[in-house]
Length: 165
Image (cartoon, rainbow, N blue to C red; front, side):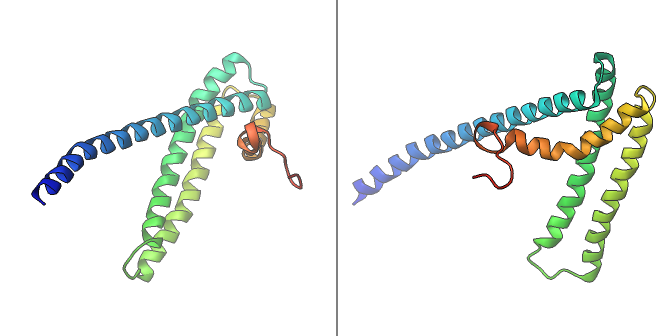
């Protein structure tokens, strides 16, 4: 009996670190894959925006410096509001009306802050983009989610659209 316990202890002692190591390696690979997918997404977005707006190389350099700064700020605002709302929604304890009100207010303020950022950066873009290109930019922003769905949808990125199987 003692021998069986010793054997199992050795197996656990040796097996656990290998299992943990394998999980850590898998997590690192997953993180690298997520990072690569995000970089592909960013490149697709850049290419799409440049093509839709008709930016010159010089305009593109100025535009994407500001655009990526804008998107990073908007992502941060959105994440903070979503995290707060998620904490309230997933709370294991009873949530007070005050907490619900704060969560709803945070989501409303998120939209207001993003609109303020859009206005601020629109004015910055206006210093080097024509009115036509500013219009094309706003139009491209509205159309981008659909283009992204086509890019990543379906087999091998081929989006079949509505009504196709």
